[in-house]
Image (cartoon, rainbow, N blue to C red; front, side):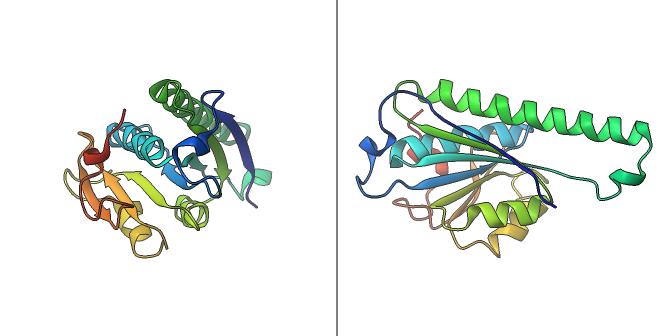
Length: 186
């Protein structure tokens, strides 16, 4: 069973559609990670959302435990501590996004989803204009999550290393295969 916690807050009072089409607001999805490449991916996702006028959807998956009914109190405490850390990482990422965009009207949606990271990001990226992920893995090489998702998602994917450089960029809107940093507005 998947449990979801969502927050939708515009970063500023202005309408986020002012930067894009009046009929359609695009969506940039970010897989939130507390790693160095995750922080760089957040900056890249904010920049892309601001430039394109898209909403920014921050997604953090946390592993729910099917074994919870039979768990020891220590196991339950560890699971709750893990969930709290994931909530904090998501809240911090949302605040960073709002702070970075200033008064540009970026709409930030944040979502903590109980479930598998692969399935969660695959589902949340459906219909998105761009999926942005931190590289993870070895320097210059996309991690396992990014490699798995890029073969399955139906939207462009940008994988960003800790220095903000794209280690994988497929069909970025309006950019072709240029590094994500080439469109940095923030």
